[in-house]
Image (cartoon, rainbow, N blue to C red; front, side, top):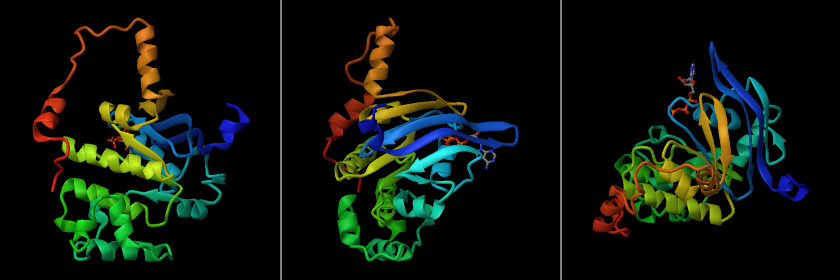
Length: 258
Ligand code: ATP
C-alpha cells in the first residue's frame, strides 16, 4: 500500500480477536476501509461478523488487536470514536409512541446536536411519514428510519449490521439505493450481510468471513474474475435472469413497499 492509499484509510483493523470461552469467534482478522467506500463483511450465520462490528463500534471489549478509526485508537479513546460513528439500532429500540420527527430530535439531543429531522427523513425517503410513529412503519421503512437515526451525529463511518435481512426484494433494492446515495454524499459505510447478491450489487470491496477468519478480500468482480481465471466452471449454464428478476420485472421496479 503506498502513502497516498494509506492516508485514504478511514478504518484500519489489525489482528483483531475475540474469544467466548472455548470459541475463537473472531480469529486475528485484519482489513482496512477507505474513505467513502462501501465495505461488506460477508459470511454465514456465526461467522463472527456482528462480534467484529461490535468491537469496532466500542460496544464489545477487544481481546487483542488494534482498531484505528479516523486516526483514533478505539481501545484507547472509545468516547472519541463514538462521536465519529453511526450505528444502526434495531427498530425495537425506538419508543413506539413518538413520531419519527420527535425520535430524530431526541437522538440529536443525546449527541448535543440540533438536527433537522425532515432533512434526515429525506435522506432515507421517509418525509411523508414524518408524523407517523415508529410502530406504524413497514419493515423496510423501519430499516430506513434506523439509518436516519444513525446519521443524527453526521458520522464519518456508518455501520449497518445486516440492514436488509427479512426485507422483500423491492424493499431491499430501495435500501440499496439509499445506502449508495449516503455514500455519494461523502460517508464511509461498513455493512455485514449474508446475501451474496447484496454484496455484489452494493459493495466496492468485501471481506469473506467464515469461522472467525477472513478468507479473502477484494472487489466482488475481481474475486469472480479470479475464480474464473482459475478454471472454475459452473455445472449448469448461467441463467440470464433469476426468479427475483422475473418478480421485479412483473411488479415494476418503481413500485415500492408502502
Ligand atoms: P449472525 O449472522 O448469525 O449474526 P455473525 O457472523 O454475526 O452471525 P456473531 O454473532 O459474531 O456471528 O457470532 C460468532 C460466534 O460467536 C457464534 O458462534 C456465536 O454463537 C458466538 N457468540 C456471539 N456472541 C456470544 C456471546 N455473547 N457469548 C458466547 N458466544 C457468543
